[in-house]
Image 1 (cartoon, one colour):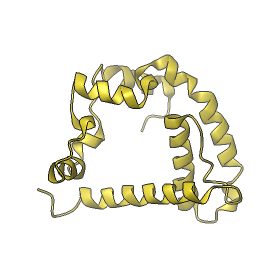
Image 2: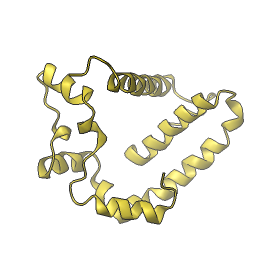
Image 3: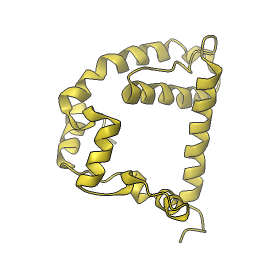
Image 4: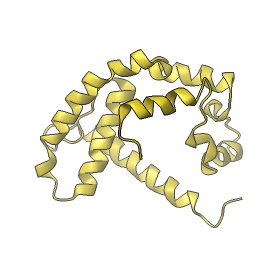
Length: 147
């Protein structure tokens, strides 16, 4: 595990212009796209992959842009820490907290699903669906039905 941001920066730089990620390497994702005849351009490699990935988040490959996420992530982390005591189930807290942090990094704002009193039902439902999807993906990765 890497905890030092300077070490993570070295890993980030070593990936080069076309990093290969876990989405393409997990068999259920390309299998789903293939069986539905719905190509997923994020499963490509090289420049075609980068072109489509950049459409999702232009700043993802720019170190300065990535550094600009830190104030928002810090703000979200402070908010999350103020809600820890409300959750006797640490796994539920971690799931909701990671969802809020992910949203902060990807869409630029937290949906604040961690706040049981003011969270929108739609956002909480979305967070739950995302968690279930990742759970099912984990089960599929180790399924004996793999091709």
